[in-house]
Image 1 (tube, rainbow, N blue to C red):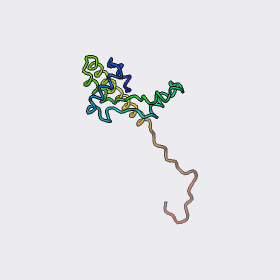
Image 2: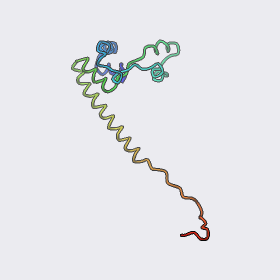
Image 3: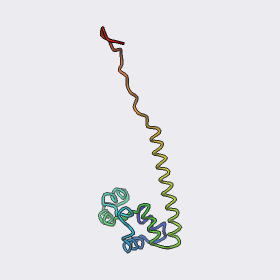
Length: 131
């Protein structure tokens, strides 16, 4: 989830959320949160950015939080709403994993190996060959 989206869920300003993360960097290793690259951010925003302001907006790249990062934010923010939202976030990620597992199972069940092709025609047996 992007920082602005999770800040809205937790009911805090994005600036405040990122400030708390900076104050608690030990709680947010690279597999919990990371900053989007310029290319990733440009790919997300390409249709929404005016050409004249594009460079300025690309410099202000958001942070992204994994499932564990979202939960750690709830512990860092320590508000009643943060606790309530963390429960919803956990349920959303569990449901997402369940859906992904279901899709994986469907793909596995619908993947049929290519049929082995048999040669067309007859094979001639030479005299003296056993049948």
